[in-house]
Image (tube, rainbow, N blue to C red; front, top):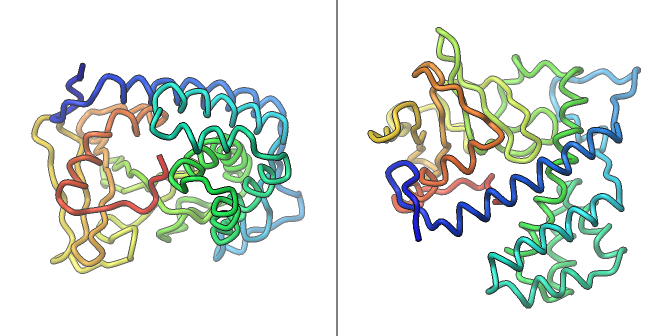
Length: 270
């Protein structure tokens, strides 16, 4: 069975999977917020050059993180039977390996992440998805505390001022049509140039364009011919009031269209 989502018909099973993922994420985001795990030290002053993560590391709750991780594995077991072998190995991970994976991922140490995954003989796609979805709500609460101390309106870089990752989606707002990038990891939004590639920084308008989707006004793909990347963009000036928590699910069809045309987004882990 499939369901029409935008101009592309998506399998109902895929939509159910992402709905289940959203339920888990929202459930644990609420729990993590109650813990108040992170606050920016009073004496800390942002240097306006480097993301917060370069000087202050995010924290997690080990018990809650493992609980969330296990629920994600249950979801994957239901919807991704082809991943069964890797899921079983992830379920049997020692606390040390799990902790090392979480810490390495949070610190952006992809070499260590890859080393652990390789040693445990787990499919990288499976392990990285599960770890990413585990740390994501922790990163979000980290960002919520940090954003009170960071001037996101004047950052203007192509990476997140909080965690240093790239954007997965953008929103155009206001009469001036300003573009705000939204981080793929911690959901922070920051102002960015309207005519520049958020992946490689290319600002040559002759190699930048956007693909309008006739069936879904206000939703488009910003593409760069230099690095062949794409960014999903929502134009709120079209009268849209997007729910950014569900925007990824609602715009999966844009990812499909972009991939069919040879574009990629390296920020997407889901």
